[in-house]
Length: 374
Image (cartoon, rainbow, N blue to C red; front, side, top):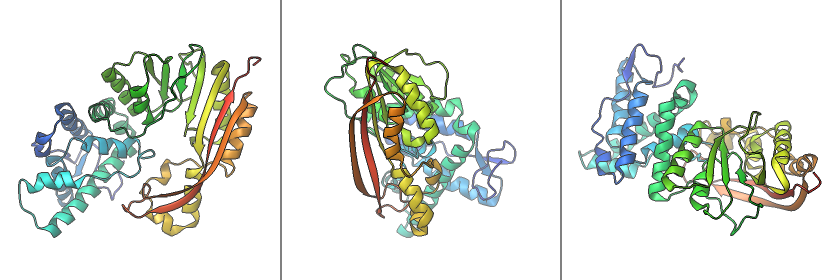
């Protein structure tokens, strides 16, 4: 089923090809043959799954979209993956028209007004493709699409060292030899794999998203890390490979869960910690504040990136306060608590670059320990 207003269709009949221009002139300047190959491969795979309506408008959209492909840069793959899989972590993603336009103007002349109009059309169609893929589970979950985008993401980070999120590490982690668990690691997992020393205990990174698991697994291979394990797990039940942990990290994860599910996870974490093991929680109520402001301020809501609100989970107003109570109820002893109010002034959630959307929120850091008697 396709939106009647969409420029793309996914049914197999009456469909124009997604890809008709396979020159990829922009990729010929790429410094990464491996990444450039995956750009070609992922669009060939998408070509088998999605295309344009067989109409005059469909043919025009096809022509414009193939300008994106003709003048694409290697990081086009990263932009597409961000828009499809991790908009929640990287909401502000735009095509890099400095690269596209440099490649285009190197081949032909186009007046500034026409170029600006073409850029708007290319940006719109690229975003629409990402939305079409994200909305079609058989495409965003396609094993080949996931593999190509995950491996390409990992290859880019490995070659450039440009980490989307970075998690700082302590100088040493004392766990009595027990492993460390990072819950729902997301994009921060790449920097953790990179920075994790061989002298540290085993690190187990978990995520439920196949794209993240695929990317981290490939990055781990590239980095040659032997004391890191990547596990696909969503904490809804089922067997977990490790019997006990010395540390459990839940960084900016619990705000994705409603309270009953958070309590369930915290009990699970308490049971998984060995005696003396510690739970570390870092979180905020930022997304709760965004949802509330969007509900009461139409101008604020209008400026948000389309689809961003759909990635947020409705949680309770007293989220940060309740976290402490729920950790205690899980049987752990709170040994550290830090609470601060912040003013976030950023355009990260705005569909208009440079248009800052200020919002206040609360951040907490909590440490809790499993006592020897538990």
